[in-house]
Image (tube, rainbow, N blue to C red):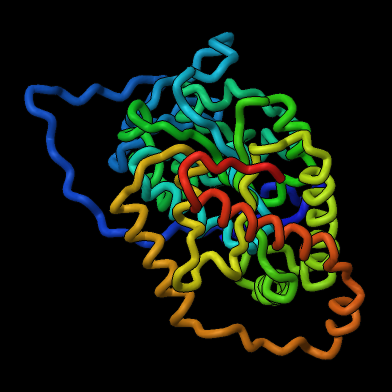
Length: 338
């Protein structure tokens, strides 16, 4: 899965996200069409990608970005940012959302723009720009990581009819207030996960020498990031400035049998039911249940820092998340307050 807390040297490195395995679909040959010959500016690729000089990658179904184009997002669509502390289930949530026919969600599509460049322009979500992959956007690009090509091909196919467009980027809390202020029409889904699970996950990846996760980003830094982001999110929610624009979800509860988070998500995004969405949600429920209750014991060196980490704001957010799901999965007409 992916990401780490916002430190200038590390922001946006490939540390969490891993694509789900999927079966290849047979390709149909277009009748009566002749493949374009490669030129000095573009080179055809057997994988269906076109490489453009300057670090750009074009995905079929998209268009080449034209500098100086529109700076607003096309109307008629809802736009959403999905985030949470790294290792909180953001990637699983992105998979669930992308299963819906009406949702196109990038996977850290613009994380460098958001976290390094402080570029929060809605123009990034124009179709032309979204499908023009630049090195300064992200390190999760189809040219460098072909395993992500199928995702963006699916997104390209349903883009025009999709009702929700967005991006999933962990650890956005330091810039989220500014992002939402810049884009008053955007919504946000923020996922919570217990400190113990998050911090142990950070430490496991930090200990794995084969992993791209930074070796120094372990349990203690996880505690710091987790507490800071919980504090900042609780302050943002309490301020009232984002009333109705943020849906809080609890990873530790949302895949329990009988939980109605899936209904809350659809109501929050104003989307109809979807068989594919429901099936993917059930897959997550089955997986979550197959693991059983978390029984990991804290190693002795971590007990003190865990005990000393303030969990007050997180508990307040968890209570808010519970109210969000109850309100949104209840009778039609219910709306979020705080």
